[in-house]
Image 1: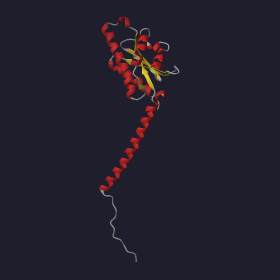
Image 2: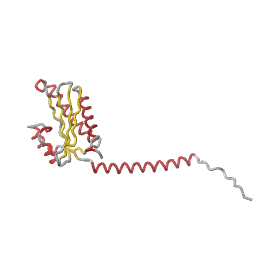
Image 3: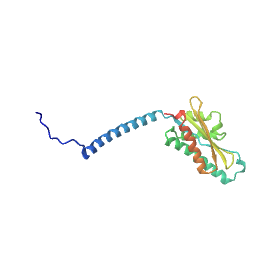
Image 4: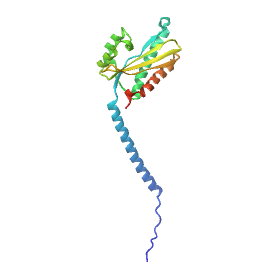
Length: 196
């Protein structure tokens, strides 16, 4: 005859469930944190360096502008130049360098021409700053209602254009200029040059 054991069925107690859940949670967290850290290391190693020149303004009605309009447009050019650099850095699309070490060269070249149409002078600046890419930007203001912002990025070693886009802006406001810069960076984020 076989002896029958009087054993209570094994049920998971709340404490046991919490303990197992905690262990599983810690294991998953360690896995994801490790993966993110490895991905961050990889991104840092492959992110290309870039020097982004200040945007230029091509104003079809410049002869008719008053002093206040000229000052307002100059402020917007500074704002949109800074916004492009900031967005490229924030989104880690490129490692944006400081242009200050080439400040004298940039000033000399800008005194006689727009950097977006200087027949390769932007590449000279890129070599001086020892970067892989150089970006030139310009805003074309046809009227206070019709504007466009443009960005061209070139490979400093080869001179080839790796990205060039234009975004239409409606209205000559700070908001429309910022939105135009953001739209350009959104387009750039999908390009092959920044794909990781």
